[in-house]
Image (tube, rainbow, N blue to C red; front, side, top):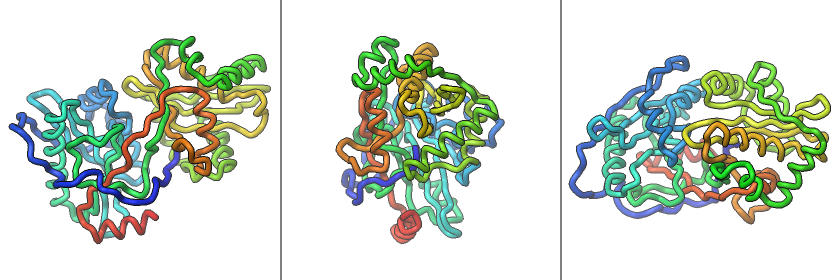
Length: 366
């Protein structure tokens, strides 16, 4: 998906201080580690293994995602919280310098907190304290901390944050339960979705998986036409020239295509992490639309993800219901025909450290 804009306004999520008074603390310790360049597979191995078992977060908290983002202008560091030798939470924190004097911190799909609210309070307080110490050592002014957790409700420990005007990653998505298997995946679709799959099958549309250099170029061709047709900003070719080889060589993702009449009509870049397969980017050509290739493409991706043991398929971003003028409206109509459960995640939340610097940031980001 592409970056976009939230509804205007900045409402307080809750009142009070960002570090609430809580009960007797657990012996939780914070440790820090910096991400390393792509190609250092052993760094952060324990953190990544912890994330893989945590469905409440996603691949954007992983070390390899931080390594990838380092190629697009972001720096990163981590705060890992342990109870004894057991990780109980923390965050991979991205940092962006948006002027010569200022930067901000960003936690995508996080922070990662325990389910128990008392423990979550303690972990969050430790995390905020670690970020304060980090901020104090920065040579730049840190305007704010931005979080985009994979929660459907703001956790009680999160106080003093403002709702941002813009989001970095989608806050509305659809997840399809893959656990019941192929028949159930079809049954939960909208009737038109099932019908269009049969149309594609009757036309002899086939599905191929291709993460090769040629597959990358074909992906860029289809994706580029799609964003132009829908007037979306999209990502640059260099973004995918780095990301796709990283995903395919490490087993964290793959590229799929539909083929019909000797041409590749539709494509999907899928990321695998933890219990979830995610449709991250993709598109389709404007030709041969009558063969309904994208429907069969995603059905086959779900079928294969189920066979690999993944529990859900995340369609990664839809326009909120009722917003027919949204730039994602057409894509969302397609995605909703595939069925699934819609998730309205909490809005993008900012904790302002320096009001003047934050005002400059919002001007820069407008």
